[in-house]
Length: 624
Image 1 (tube, rainbow, N blue to C red):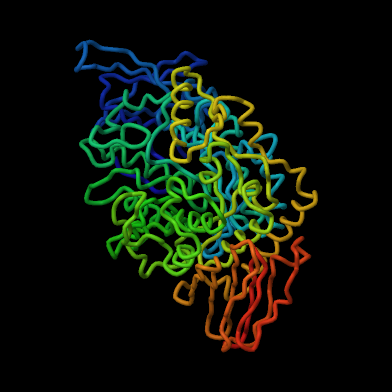
Image 2 (cartoon, rainbow, N blue to C red):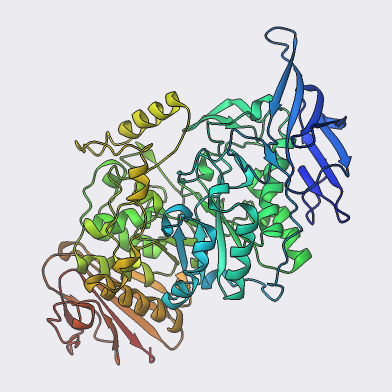
């Protein structure tokens, strides 16, 4: 089947004159028909090449409920025909959840008014990651719209939505999604998402969407009844791998290419954050990520809007983010957890589990300099040499953070950093992120030091699956040796206590932290050195005995010097007596930010400065 970059072809779609067209890949079927629930119509599909089935009909209308009836011959078992009733694998709207029927949806019906929006440059992304269900009390796309002016006042330029593909029930992180094309009905469904994106663009905000192409969720997953969606060649942490390179993989690849194109074209999403791409098993001649990139580039050229692909990657392999013409997959950027791990250990995180591989300020300085901490040396945690140098990769290709949904929610109790370190250390960690030559990301509520946890939650209907999730959750923390009882992921209480408390915004230190973040983000956007993500003009030095890092960034005529003290006592650091005319830009220990304000920030003639415990000083010079 040919891909049309300007129009979704798979699933049920409506053409320019409102006629329904269905393309279904079901090579395991001997007969296929579509049943329109309300009218009781049963319309047969016609068999096409390569396992596809097709129907064009004016008897199907938007919002009609439908499902497929498949006559399948199970050769391996009974040799008999079996009638299956299944929702559309490419369904756009699962109004009754993952176990219900599909609902026809017209992608072209929404009246967009963002025609002047062409996107923002990647290096301008200030990312705010949020979970739709817990960001507001209502947990809807529409309620996010009410907070957009707040995010703009904070300085955010791009919001990142955790996955919205239809998942079981009404409570889930989103990584158990079963229908990749369907927008979660409890959030408001597809029209509400289109409306949110439209409003964001009118206000100047980009929208990033988290998508999962490495596995399908377990409940409501009937893809194997249609065709060769899975392969036994590989396993993933979530079970059977998606078939990207085995026999009959072509249509599976088309399925996911179509998905990426849909979000950009039909929902006007600006960037995709692609979950755990290291779990995508593809050893074919052209990696699926590269093929997605090729089609996205074609769409970008055709419609003149920027589209970015950012991956979560646990391999320290810059082949993923290298250009296609240099043998890479062409991804525009990646998350680097190693910056986070080094930062957390610098801030006092106990070295359990994967944190055992990190040595605090030495590795933090290395991440500033090299992006990857491990770029070929031996990893004790992995028990092998690991990583490759990120030579030639730009600063805008790396996303860094002090918190995100994983690093908070994957703690057993879901504790935010605000309850793990001091107020002063929180400010230091934020400064460490925003002074980096990388793209900064903050996790919802971080900016006001939210103390409510963000815990792992689900709402499965299968009791055996619920119990398996509970057991798996407990097993996940064996490396961290925490003896507390694991919160029940199925409990509504676990979900509700993970919601943000917006009442904290104007309360004491929460208000101070919010203003501090606003100041940091304003500096990041307005200062010509901080805003220019030039890794070549970056140098970080670790003072291991003092638990300090000295970060220098510069251009031809200007310079930034950041002094970070992760120790719990004041330190004296030698900056450089040749750095003249350095003016203080920010002192996290100032009384303005509820700090102790012990020192004057003056640099001695010998180039030394005293810095308060758990604080960051930022200096700026226009004469290098």
